[in-house]
Image 1 (cartoon, rainbow, N blue to C red):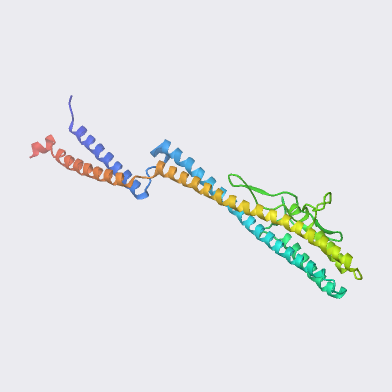
Image 2: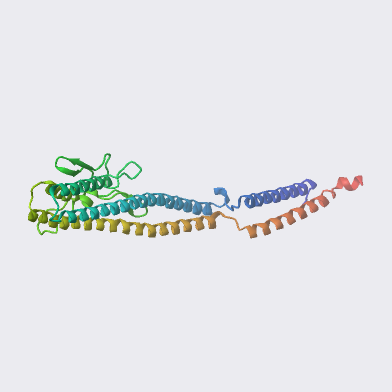
Length: 309
């Protein structure tokens, strides 16, 4: 087999160019820190990295949804706590009204306090969440869900709760109708109790002049009983929101672990082992240097150079 001078030169040049390409690839990987920058680098690893990236995006979306639910529940828990404090104030005021030495004028001052408490409760029940909806709007309400009319406070929201998916359903609102208007009646067979109707009844009865001590005492007795019932009902709802916040903490941990797992998977698929890469790069440099030295020797061994020498 005849090997021409041109063939020797061409093979040497091809080998040198391949070594240069390998060095350039290694240098690019070391600069970017990525073993896989393009699908063509490693199609299987690129597919793994893409699936991991999609999982990370889902985790981020779940975290945003969870943050929205946590914010709404924190505000709702705080609002229910305020409502409970207001009802405690109303209870103390009703107890004072039972003093048999009070005149109608003195009871009227207590009635004013009760009306103020009622107005504050209505404000709490209609509290917005800061993003255009209402904490107690149920499944949605474009306007304040509780409306004060001639027949008392009515609920014009949508009963139920708005949910958001954060790998599991989490609430974005509280069922205001149930929380404020549907407490169990301590009197067997009685209708459900509305927080506002309970206060309205006590206010109207205490504001009626000329009532005897027995009638006033009955109003105070019934009022305290019913205020306790609606207070306990609100306390149950507050406990529910607190439990939801506990669930949110646990869910956040799971989302964080899921995202971390996806990040590790992506890193395993496309990141470069820098120690191994540096070792390979040094070996490639050594090989390239040796190839250049060999080529410099071979190129001087042509017949023409020999004759001319």
